[in-house]
Length: 314
Image (tube, rainbow, N blue to C red; front, side, top):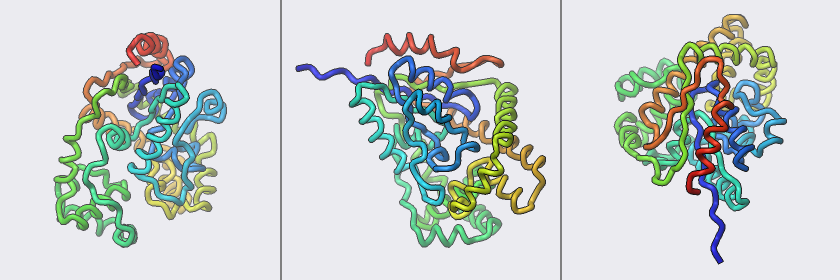
């Protein structure tokens, strides 16, 4: 007896606020799919508004995976993502449905398609020591031991600075030299449908600004205050989420709300730029960029993609 042919997975990537989730919902509904979130912050329960999680209605319409899988005080990394994502994909395909990977965390896509690389696992004692170290001391050490990484890293992202120094101390080698080896890892063969949404900068900036305003109007400050009671401040990874970190600073008296909102817009636009730079450099072979004009919804792409995907070999 011939086994049924299981649908190949789809991959949707791109910058924050470009419309990935909207397109994924349309494709999932049309192609009998389920969505696997590729977002390093949507894994945390309670970080809802600031991570732009799909609404309860959207999650009822289409099953979503890797959302709300850990508490805000717990750690989550690329290795855990890969293990959970592969398990979700296997279950989805066993049901005869199509997995649709959707998100903006490039490292997770790279780990899934190209492997985790040879970086050493986290050392809890060393990590705790580095996390207690003042930021200026961390940056000074990084500048001295690995000028290349110091020149490229987001110095406002304490989690990344700590991880770079952790790897340097554990291996005795510059972090940049080890990342260079990871950069050469190709995508796995046989990825049939990998799409990257692309919008012109003025359009994307306007969408980001509108999203940030909507998040604050929806209660981002109150959500952040509640998450602080649940351990947000004890998790350096979760605390790096854009929006939450700035609101925590606002709640501690560092700046007024209006300045905080503008800072979140700036940081989000900077993040989107880094995401697009990453994809231009590391997009898997055969990945297709989908240009969207200002004022156009990502959902408008769905009918054409549905026809193309449905007619392709499974």
